[in-house]
Length: 156
Ligand code: FES
Ligand code: FES
Image (cartoon, rainbow, N blue to C red; front, side, top):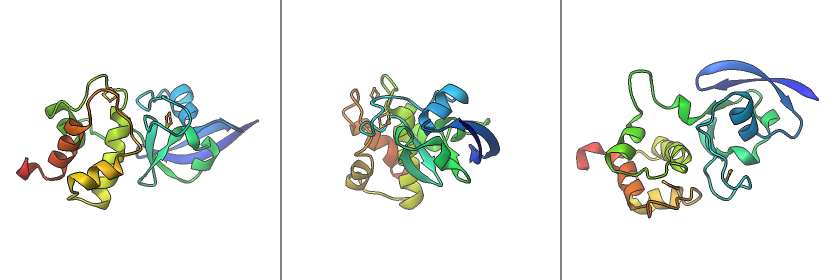
């Protein structure tokens, strides 16, 4: 059965019909064409589907679409502005923290939540916060450097 829900998506209030059992990941990718949110494991293990829900990182494959009624969702498409990249996006480019790019949207959104909570994290804190986001390519060092640079560009 189709149910209408209202929520804020990337700064805009929207209404969408959702099916019972439909996940937020399915809603974003298949109905709203926001394919920056990636489907990896579809089981809560890889973090590639990470979006922000009321500012907190969640695995969109584990959240029912119906649960976002009244919430604020931010996907990678909502992070930068028309004028330019978000500082984290720019830092990932500058520090070569993107290889295949599959983990990158989720990694950047998780890092954005970290920097909102803790604007000056240590490397250990960055690694700990990002532990739910898996990357098969980079070995993580460049990602940690990029997050640190975005947090404190004057020290990089
Ligand atoms: S696709 Fe959601 S955690 Fe892997
Ligand atoms: S850049 Fe390929 S999985 Fe992270």
